[in-house]
Image (tube, rainbow, N blue to C red; front, side):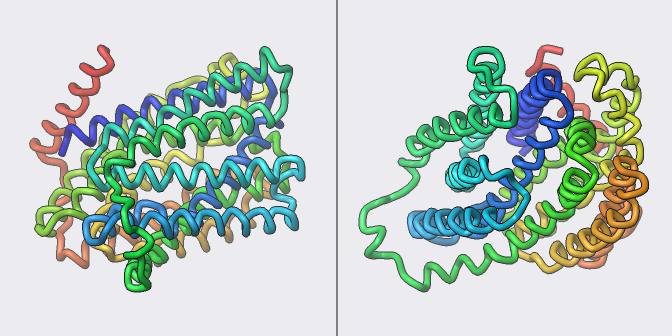
Length: 425
């Protein structure tokens, strides 16, 4: 299991590097205000993708081994079309996206949702390398596209990101159709489609409700900070978030592979033990990475991103504890998702979201970026504690089982050594 995890870690590191380069280009070339506008556009697209994923997201990892795959794909495609249409109507009557970008945001959301379906199909078939490739290719094209817009096409606003994304997702989607073709039997697909097959998607609603609540918990304060305090503040804060969330590369990669493993496992006790070990490894490694990030001086942010980003480190100082503690529910979530039990996740994320809204309302107006970071840490701590308590009680665990052992240290060392070899560090 370690090798798929490490391959996914490598992919996420590469994705983070490309996302960082894109953010760097926008920040240095266009400044905090445009960077804030791009962040709001990306966040809005994410929300539409999550609604599309009610039928086409990672719930398919759980459903595909238990059902005919080809009968799950067509409803997922149709649902993506419906969500795109509803999204277009919604954006016409809200100030979330400037009028000139509404159509392009909807198209981007639709392309991304189809790509998400194909990614999940490959993941469910344990084609981890091909699935990871679909994560990297659009980012490479986006980076090239943003460069072209800024330096050759004379486009210097948020449109540079939008046009580059349209190119990236369109080309990658075409490639993904060829990747999944051999995994789907198209013959008689419409003849075999029945209401009984559609009922299997009932699993998708609680799964995606969990994901949507988590996304709201992660990004609600973006809207309050950007729309109420100004996009320039969100531009600065989003750089800090991008840097701190690189810490989650390890637990998110672990979570993806552990979810697939648990979904296909009949030995739940083994998966519980595995979850405990992964929690310990992730928290330890993420703590080390956070220490390294904390050592970066404020002047480095100004040097790299431009003078408008001098306050990045100051803005995110209260967010460090929240980022570390949230490593725990990222891993635990993969266990509950893998066994198809969503109630615990929904309760934990809902409590975290309510906490986020309440503290954002109280802290962001007087303290702006610092208030946003503190609100996030309080919210992450609430949901993390709840989910950890559920996991311990459901599996009759003791505190001693979460103490780091020599075997955990050896496993972590092996992961690091493998990564060093891959990157020739």
